[in-house]
Image 1: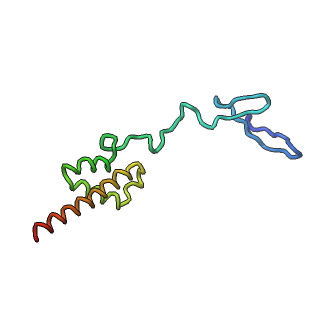
Image 2 (image 1 turned 90 degrees about the vertical axis):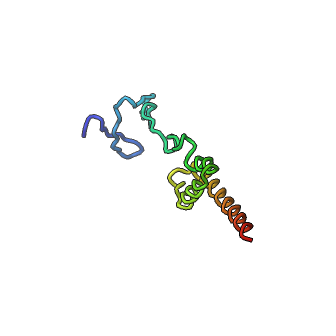
Image 3 (image 1 turned 180 degrees about the vertical axis):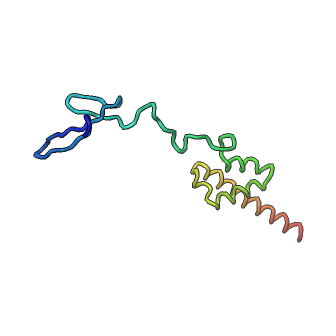
Length: 118
């Protein structure tokens, strides 16, 4: 056993306790508390990083540029049905908007082609 390990008796039994002696240990009265996380060691979360395509995400970027090039709506629809949003759930709304717009564009295109032929 090292110098940080001690036997502590409590309620009719002996317990083997290892005391923490680093900079994060705080002593208050007879008890010792340890900080769970240090402010300096904060990790970034999964959704703290910005979205691709200038921060608005692939879905909304495809939705906006789809008015210039409608093929981008179909690209976003393919990503939506391929469950691309499971990587980052923030992408789901933009991809769904592009999929709905692609469906509407397809219907309008079908009606226009049907009226031209008949």
